[in-house]
Image 1 (cartoon, one colour):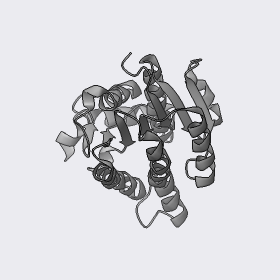
Image 2 (image 1 turned 90 degrees about the vertical axis):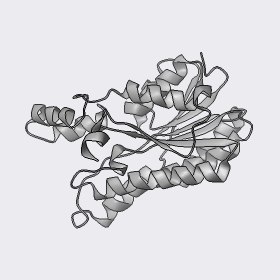
Image 3 (image 1 turned 135 degrees about the vertical axis):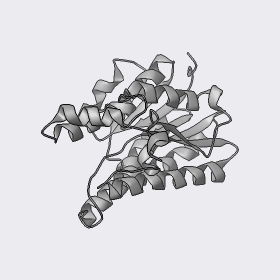
Length: 249
């Protein structure tokens, strides 16, 4: 139980990678606070008495300040922040509306800024304070028609380095860059195609391992980075991409 007596915040913990991270942290003894807009997020607790759910819009600073005020009143401090919440959007620059561009940047980048800004003062007493930001392999290599998404994920790498430099040596910050992961978000994307089986096979084949990752596989690395075993990791991004980066860039 390597996270006993640790308190972690996981954004977007209702499903996908965020839920896998929350579940594994609970299994390893942590107290977990889930921040998520999804009303069904309470189902992510798994019935644990150490899991707390706060429904809030991560792009709304007023709602977040209210949520963090409750956290401050309830918990002695925070050890881990996993900035996981994000959305996938599609379109070239000319296809992307201002509204879609702003939505992508707000959910994928501004929410990390808000949550980090509010969490860092609560992490001062932690012996292994760490922020883990979920980026994407598409911050480094990309496909067609993801202009806003790829830009947002690349911005996270710069944000990660800034946090690592500004708050060292007390606080560590790393970014995780997954390849394709079978989450509800990816399933929704695949379902938009007429031939879903073909899309799945094509997605599998761009990875050297010829498969799509499970959320739990990404969560395993996140837990390693957040643990005492990862205490010399900071300011870097880590690809967990099944070899897609070797093959394409």
